[in-house]
Amino acid sequence: MQLTADMQRVVREQSLGFVATVTADGRPNLSPKGTTSVWDDEHLMFAAIASPGTVTNLATNPNIEVNVVDPIVRTGYRFRGTAIVLTAGADFETGLTRLAANGFTTERERIVAIVVIAVDSAAAVVSPAYSTGSTEQQVRERWLEHHDDLYRRA
Image 1 (cartoon, helix red, strand yellow):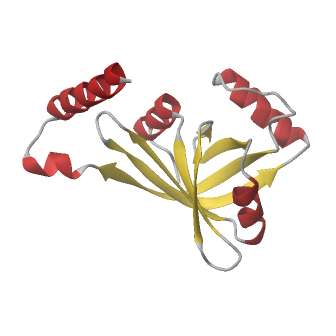
Image 2 (tube, one colour):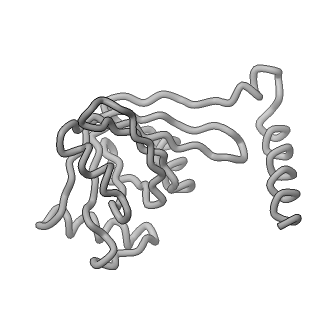
């Protein structure tokens, strides 16, 4: 499927995707990936840095879901698809180049693999805060104040 300009914007701005895979015994595995980015108009990607479970799971079941949400405005996207794991070769090198272009590390000793996701479907994620009639500006102000208070106390 074609990733919209807004989907690509959210992924590029947030870069933290929560990736769900399935273990060999059918259990869910959820892992945050701080290098989530756009590969092209139909694919997402992330670097497998500390992801042995994710990479192992994808070897037996390539189905994957990635959620990327802006924690301040409480909206984002859920992406579903299939993944391939690149550990060497021209596509792996392309992945490193794309990571560098997006401001991520490309230290080979840290990157075990590049995971590329062919997105089959995507859906908007919208907080229930909006169901009360709150505007995006109101939600933004509430969560900016929350985070400001949280970190000011730290």
